[in-house]
Image (cartoon, rainbow, N blue to C red; front, top):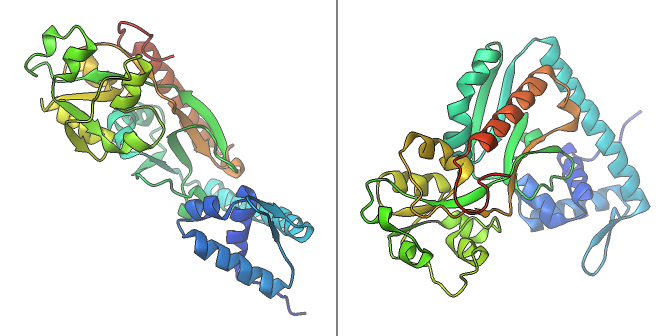
Length: 314
């Protein structure tokens, strides 16, 4: 008996769109254009001869046929993922793939990994540093450390730690040691993480001033860098004052490579979350890594430098 099956790629695109109830969100997850997702769904509907979505003015809804197919696909995808997880368990493989931002990888995760290897030498960790939000299922990635708002549909997500920002500079930067006011600080060369200026994390200079109640001040001048890691490196090299997330600069402050010319911290809108897949959440290698990661996050919070004003990390 012949089976009428559409292309599996079309079914997966539909499953992601059904989970989000948004072609735009599905396109972001799949790293495709919104138009490509929309055309793929229309082609699938034409092939099946049924409407899968009700396209309303400002939102999508699943039709009864769409709900039925989405439910079955979700079950099928979970079953496939569990089967692959069993391959992993049965073959005794101990490779763990983790993705996060390059700044978090280099400034926080990598310096701590030797402690994990001491505890679990049998687990081989591959760190994938990428500015893009990678699809864990599609890329075969076990876990992600996300700096975000905590909304990760279709995934497990647990809070690792919150964060704050503080001005930092090299102890060799001329004039840093006589700063007593925000106005005086802004007279020093400022270093900007351009990625933070439009990501709603409240990790940029403008947000820092707003939260200190100094909206009238300007902090646009200065050199700009495409990532937090680069702006921190520039501060270490003495090029100016960067606004650093405490999670990323705590080690440098502890070693004396950086100092706080004006130790006033403000909270970020984003926090760190450990994101994974429901179907692999109970694998031993993931349980070990999650437990260790939570301990490291707690240690970071408890040992962050004590600064004036609000507490460092809460």
